[in-house]
Image (cartoon, rainbow over all chains, first blue to last red; front, side, top):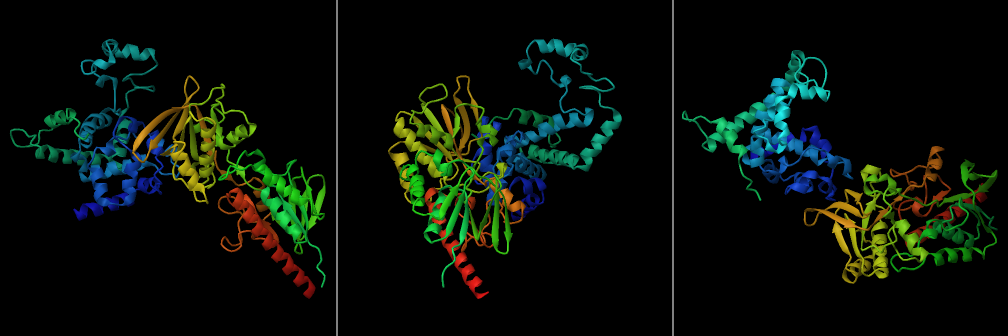
Length: 239
Length: 352
C-alpha cells in the first residue's frame, strides 16, 4: 500500500503536465463554472484539484480508482479561465495515465471502459489511422442517426465525393486512405511515446479484472469478448 | 540661523497630492501642485458616496481646496502634463507642456491609479452588453440622482455584483488584491437595495476582504437587513439572452454545485492598476517600479513614501491600492518624510 502511494507521488512530480498544471489553487470555482462536463455529471474539477493539491496520497489513490477522472472531456476550457494559471484538465490527464499504469482504472465503471476505448478507437487507429470511420457506424447499431443513414452508408463512395471528401482513396483529401509509409511512421510514434505500452497495460489489467469477476471461458482463462460485453452494459452505480 | 524657504513640487492634485501640499505649505515650504486635468480632485470627482459612512467625497475635495486658500506660497497649475524630470546636484528640474520648467528641492509624486479596463475581461461582456457596467459607472449613475434602470429603462429585478475584476487574476497580469473593491461592492449593494427594495442582489466573491474599521458592520447589515446574497464563486462568463438579460455561470463553491442564473444587470467591481505615468519615471531610470508597476518604496515597512531616488517622494495610490482614509493618512506620512529630508538638506548646506 505504502509502495503504491510513493509511486503515485513520484509519477505525479515527474510529469511536466502536473508541474505546469497545478501552481496553487485558491478554490474560486471558475474551472467548474466553465466546465461542460460539470453540467452533466456529478463532477467538480475544483474539488479534484483541491484533493491533488492537498497531497493526501490516500485520497489521490481513491481518485485514481474512481469514476471522477474519466468525466473530463479534455476541452481545456479550464485553462482559459483559471486566474492562477492552473489547468485541471492537464492534471487529470496525468491522473489518467497513472491510473492506466497502475491498473487503478479497473476499480471504477468509467475506468473499466478504457478497455472498450483501447479495443475500439485504439485498434482502429493502429489499423487504418483513424479512430473513427464512417464504416464503423453500422445503421443497425445507431438508430439515432435516422433512416437517411442507411442510404448514406450504402452509397458512401458516391455521397462523400459530393461533399469533397476522398473516402478510402489514394491521394489527398478528407477520409483518404492513409498510405503505408504514414502508417509505419504513425505506429513508430505510438511505440516511441509509450502509447503501445499503455495499450498493453490496459489489456493486462483488464484481463486480471475479468478473472477477478469470474468472466472466464471453459479453460478458466479470461473471456475478453464477454468482458467487453460486460463493461459495455455496466450500469451506473456511483450515484 | 534663518531658514531658507524650500520649494516642493507635487505632481497630481488628487486627494493625496492636495493633502500633502497643504501640510507642506503649513510647514512653511513653497509648494507648486501640477495637475494634468483641468480640475483637481482626481477619481473622487466621479464618486457618489464613500464607504463606510456613505459620506459625499465632495466635501473632502472642497475642504482641501479651501485650506489651500490660506497659503500664499502654494500654487496650483492645472491642465499641465509633465514631460520629464531631471536631477542636478540634488535639485530637480521639472519640464511640463507649454515650455514650463519648474525647479524644486523635493518632488512628491501623487499620480494615483488607473481604473482597470473591464473590457479586458471579454468573457464578462463589458462594452459588448449594455447591462454590464462597472462600479465606477454605477457611482456616476447614483451621483446623477436618477433611479437605476437597465439600458431599456426598466427597474432591474436582479443585480449581480462581480468581485475581483482585474484583481487577483494572473490572466490580466494583476495578481494582487485591489482591496477596496469588496467593501465598495457591499456599499453599492446596500445603496441599490435602499433605492430599490424589491430588487434581488447577489455578490459573487472569492474571499470577502473586509479589513477596515466598520466594514464588517456593512456586510452584516447587507445580509441581515437587506437580504443580499453572497455566493462564493468566480464567474466564468456572462452571456446576453434574447431579451437582453444576462445569463451568468459560476460555481457555488460552498455547496460544490455549478450555478446558472439570469440577472438584469451586472456590476463589475473593477480594481486599481498602475497609472501609465509611472512608465515615464522608470524609463529615465529616475525611479524603480515594483513587480506590479506601482512606485517602489525605499523600504516597504519603514519608509513607504520614500522612493529609491533621494528627494522624490510618493503618496497615495501610486504606491498601491488604498481607500480614501488610508490615502489621507498616507499623504500625512509623506509630508513628514519630505519635511525631514528638507531639514536635513538645510543642515548639510550650512555645514558646507
